Image 1 (cartoon, helix red, strand yellow):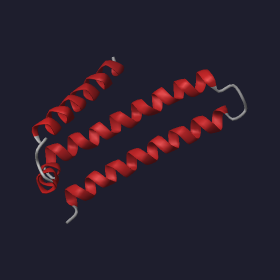
Image 2: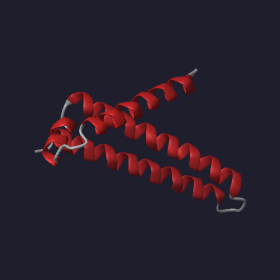
Image 3: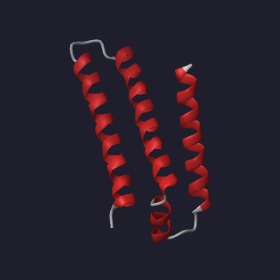
Image 4: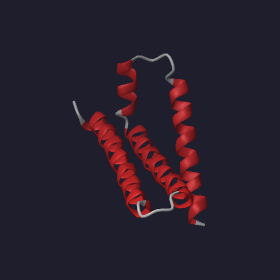
Length: 102
């Protein structure tokens, strides 16, 4: 049941992102920044980043578990998780800086 909810959130956020980018296709930088500063766009972008890096970590974990057969397996899985977490945090901080910064 939780997986279906995760997929629903991911699909909704992805669909929102695609439609939003298509709607702002010819817009300049200042218009996109103003759009991203709206509370709904900020929230959806943060949710999209969480979903993207969560699913990236899950996919890389499967690859690591299936194809790495040595002592480096566990450190590689930990490094992969930490790198996904670091990228997600960096993306979220960037969105929040745009939303709440000057």
